[in-house]
Each structure stands twice: as C-alpha cells, then as structure tokens.
View 1 (cartoon, rainbow, N blue to C red):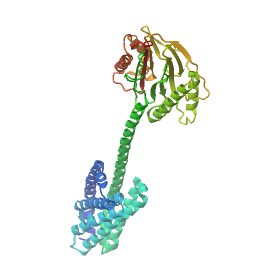
View 2 (view 1 turned 90 degrees about the horizontal axis):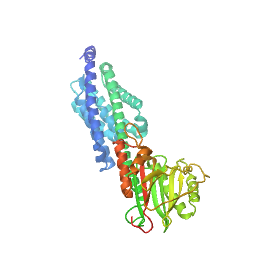
View 3 (view 1 turned 90 degrees about the vertical axis):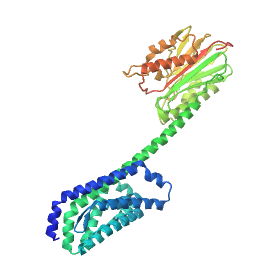
View 4 (view 1 turned 180 degrees about the horizontal axis):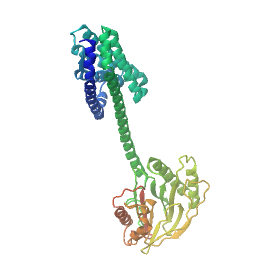
Length: 471
C-alpha cells in the first residue's frame, strides 16, 4: 500500500481507531475495577511470596496486553491498540519485574499476531515488541522510585505520553523505509498517544481510589473494634449495682447509662466512704467519643479518691478540681453532682459543680434541689465549692440525671424538659428505683419517637427506706 493511500485510508478511519481503542479501554477498566474492588488480588497475595506476587501481577498485565492487541485494528503491519496499558499497569502496581513479565507476555503475543507479509510489517512488529517490553520495565522502575508522585493524574498522564512517544519513536528508528514508518506514525499518533495516556491515567486514578477506600474500610473496621473494646472497658469502670451491691437493706439503688455514641462522657459512681457513709456521683464530661471517655475515667478515679481520702466534701471536690485542671491540655471539663449519705442519720451532704439539679421525691412529691451551684470541674483552678446538707426521711428518693435526659429531642426538636421529667416522677410512689428509671426511659423514648439523640442519657436513683428496714 502506497504512503498516500495509507494516509487517505487511515484518515477516513480515524474515528474508528478512536472508537475501537476507547471501547477496549473501557472493558479493561471495568475488569480491573472488579478485580481491585473485590480484593481478590490482595487476599491471594497475602498467602504467597513476593516474587509470586510479581508473577501474578505480571501475568495479569500481560493478559490485558494480549486483549488490547486482539481488539486492535491493523494498519500496514501496525496494530492500533491499547496493548501498552497492561505492562504499564503491571509495572506501576508490581514493580519492574512485573512490568517486564507483562511486557514479555504481551510482546510474544504481538509477535504471533503481527503480519509478516512485508519487511515493513515485520519491522513494525519488532519495534512494537521492543517498545512493549521496555515500557513495562521502565514504568516499574519509575513506580518503585516515584510511586507517590506517579499517582497524581497529571504526572500519570505525562508518563503515558512519554511512553507512547517512545513507542512511536522506536517505530521510526526501526521500520524501513522511513517514509512508510512516518506515514504510519503521522496517522496513528493522535489516537495512539491520547487514548493510551488517558487510559493509563484512569487506571492509576482508579487504583489509587480503590486503595484509599480499602485503607479507609480497614481503618473503620479497626476503629469499630477499638470502640467496642472501649465501650466494654468504660462499662467495666462503672460500679456493678446488683442485689448484693451496695448490699445494705436500707438502700435501693439503680442506674442506667446510654451513650449517644459507642463511648460517652457521662458516668455515675456509687461507693462507701466508710461502713455508714455512702458516696454517689453523677457527672457529664464535655465532648463525646473516646476523648470524653478517657477524661471520664480520669475524673471518676480522681473524684472517688479525693472523697474517700479527704473528710470535708467541699475540700475533696476542690482538690479534685485542682487535680483535673493540671495537664488538662485538651481543655475539657466535667459537670458533677457529688453526694455523701450518712445512713444512720439520714443526712445527705452534697456539692454541685455546674450539674443539673437532682429531684428529691419526698412523700410522693418530686421537687428539684435547686441551690447555688459551683463552677464545673477542670474548668479553672483555685475554685472553692460550697457543701450543702439536707435530711432524708424514710422512703425519700433522690433522682439524679445528666442533661441528656431533659434535652432529649423529638423530630420537631422539642426538648423533653424539666416539666415532663417531674410528671414522670409524680407517679413514683410505691415504685422501686429501677422501676422509676425504666419509667423515665420509656417516657423519653415515647417523646423522641425514634429520633436519634446527640447526647448521652444517664440516670441514678437512690432510695433510703430507713435504718435497718428492708427495701
């Protein structure tokens, strides 16, 4: 075929070249996306050695190269195809060995698929074989040294252009006569360089995206596992209120904590200062998640140690505040209500550090204990806290809660509020502490009507039935 005839025929089929190459590229992209997205290679690679991984990637790239050749269009011995993408991809993902293997596989197939009718056709075949092998190896070397740069789309596109220009340059150098080589190159250069370069860029972008998604999935799985463990640890830090604890017949204690996330910042505590004095705490740490849970653990331990070691409750809370303020680089704080109940006397001493007022249910009438509150803990050092005292009669109940109770929302963003809470507690006569908490929980759920809550919901109810009397 004469040069002018070749040019005329090829120009007429330029659109066909584009269409055919883009169609082949689309199939390769879909297959590569499926393989990468299904994690087949990753799972298989985890069971074999590194050289076997290189072999697997190389063979896969070679198969892509073969498919590119098989679906290409022939022009005077040249096969216009996306064959080079397979070795380029193998080199990028598996290194120079994989790129070389893919190039050899695709090159050998190209040898048997090429025309040998004329010397020009044979030389074109040789040039394409050499180019394909070299491109796979070169891309492997570039990936090993500049992998992080190569994943950038504009760099990948530039590499693709350089590789295809190199391919066509070999055709010009090897194929004789030069005029025939030039006619071929002039005709196929645009679709050949553009489609292969864009295809390589899309491949790299897709692989990078799949890898990032895989890493994110693994990270989410790891984080979920850690949060589940953190939730178990957090719950293990709370006192196990059971029939045997606190273990005093004159006490009826129940508690509930439902974090808004896997772990939360709310906590409660119940412990004996001595054989006749029961201390209890309900608190709410600022923030949510693991940071709040860590600060919660520190706050709980600090408050308990100070209340146990320091006779004066106000001094104990002040000392706890100083301790929590130290090294508080996260600038978190905690609201708390700390009480100490003298069981024989029925006398309750308490300190409020910026927390919601509890409800005292006496003779069936619920009322908030709204006295002057102190500043939050860990908010500012040097703070002093006032200790208050109230007397509890036989059968009185104390209901403590965090703001997640009164600030529970429904779909219309209406708060549960203090009035609804008081209404729930008005019917508390004759109920156990656990029944009171369950009734409040049911009222909150009815109010929220399935609307997700943004805050932890924690409650603690203590009933003093009187010295020596059964609960």
